[in-house]
Length: 174
Image (cartoon, rainbow, N blue to C red):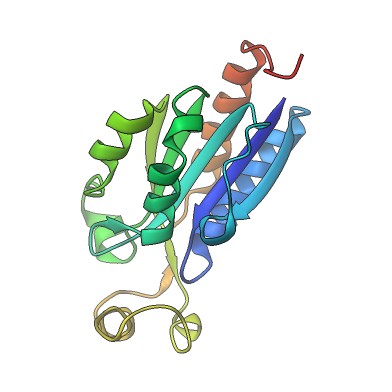
């Protein structure tokens, strides 16, 4: 079974989550490819998709949301899981995460098996020279606590659940 893990990441935290998910899926002998949403095309050969995005100001990264919209004709006929990466800082430690604004519409488009929110990470050394806009850079540098808030055990457990579910789904390319 071939799984395509797609991510939208501006500072690398979501990419690292996508790579960890792929590693865990490979442990269950799944064939996995990891691609950035900005350059990925939906492969008609993929049997399943895991698609994630960093969250900035309550929104998915534009390229990740656009990937789902652009490829919904393929995605609607495959098992799909969505994940969001964020918040960080006080939002990660003191508040229940809020579903990003696009997720309801994406859910309606492709009927994913699940959407999961994971806390993210902020390494301020990655901010300068990044794709963040001026306001986002200002917030990242002054208003958000730096640190890694990702729960790797929860991420790996979620990926293991995806692998278990895919073990019950026949591959399209039999």
